Image 1 (cartoon, rainbow, N blue to C red):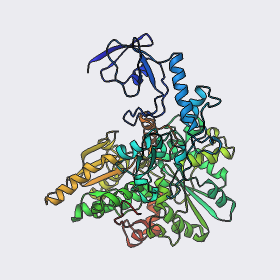
Image 2 (image 1 turned 45 degrees about the vertical axis):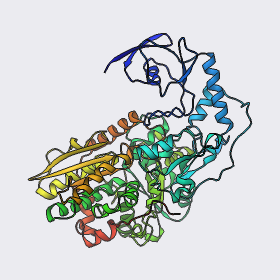
Image 3 (image 1 turned 180 degrees about the vertical axis):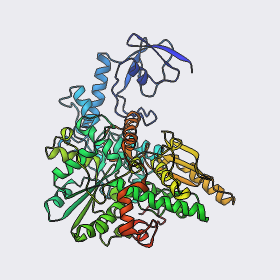
Image 4 (image 1 turned 45 degrees about the horizontal axis):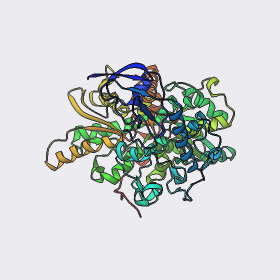
Length: 581
């Protein structure tokens, strides 16, 4: 690609042709303020805060959406630009509720940070905050349209990255509003509760439904509180305490939960291993006995919701295995309760998840009460747990590491890689190889399904059998694969794949809608590296080798896909309408 020579504030810079001024300035060590821009999204140029000048021209141009031009000198900061940016910010703030103290993004708000950077202490404009109702209709997310700054990020994420189209702009000019599709409630829209809108919102207009008070009530009650933590939480929560993304904090989380007052600390990675035993056995059954192929993974609740709404004809292809979270909840109130002689009615089952859709999953249908009770009673996001730890005065960074409780806390490396795109596939292949050939796989690192590409396709060998596989992350990348499967079925051809893994969020659960704010590709890469590091450090790296997994089948479940296992660990799906009004 051609190289362009420009100047940023008189300093020479070389960049590739097609580079935006904003990116070129960063290369020169200059930060231009932004509000609507996000590295995950196409430039939107909505806010006008990133304006710059071209030397010799009176025009102000938007750095996020304008390509550099050979020979030009871009002025990024001078008194006029500072004054214009300040005025734009004052106008935005005049239309934004000044409720920082009780806002979900207090302290991590991009508008708040800009106001501080520009030393805005008062606003010369009348307040134009609209009197609009808050939408709390879903079990996962809250939408407060009064706080929306019309940056467009959530709409772009929902439509372009996720292909859900649950959010849109309506109206024009000062009457422009961001709303659920057609002005409906979020619960009536195609929303899949993935939370990527909340993760990308720069202010507190969309945020997870906070349930920390309910958790504290459980702790203060006579309930036996059993908590599980998901794979991706361990490589992200440290960011809320100044640690680097990707630092593995598993033992510190266990310790923090005990200091918060919980009675038992488990790890969802155990149930990820359990999922592999069930889902892997189901895959082998389909491949060897002529079952419906491809088999499609089912552990992401936002994906299953999307599938039920957009691809209900694919239901026969979905693995019936529940997600690890729901399996963990089911065995907590059955196997664990029996082992410890605890009345399951007295157990409060809580899950710490990187995902807002998990709040929806626990009550999606009757299959989530396989134990005879709610298998999982409450879901908190990584962000919620981080806030609880802070409010409890716990010095998280300096906590000594502790271990999970038995008999459903131990995990193999295969369980932890569930947190990244390709991880479910890799974990399944490690165990499927043993189930098909009777021999352990020689190299557990299945690099063919790793990486950040939107869609990965390849072939893995299981003895004499060859499996064609596909991995997709980010909902917008799924449609083509599903249509490929549909086309093959319609033509009476062999399926293009045997096994397909889908995760709703870009990068997988490490970038879920409930993770700490500020996720971008650099952060995703560091969290992913942390997950693989946890796997590599594990003494046991295949699910079927986990001694506690071996024990639960010996003592309780019998064998994978047994009648008892199906009752507790499997589910059903149903077609759901896009709109429910």
